[in-house]
Length: 112
Image (tube, rainbow, N blue to C red; front, side, top):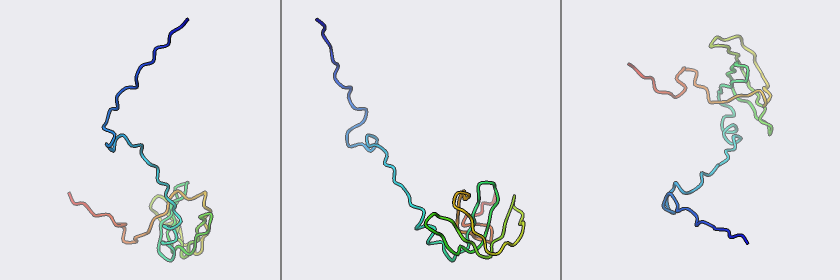
């Protein structure tokens, strides 16, 4: 005959109403609305291999392939040339952002 002893569960570390007891929620973000908002605006696109492209975002399809007008190719901060119309396949894109040609890109300059 064997006897099993069961221990009571340990007390909670935090009060049940504490935000620390709630599991963090993952909120998926759909990038399509952001991309659609950038259509007909100047954008900066970096691809996986380090090149960057600037130009006017002409269109985005359901796969998130992007079409740029008046595109320029940049590598390591130097312009490589004017390309005109460019189609960039979705799986090559690392990130896309709005482009501010003045160089600040919305950041505040810090003097020191």
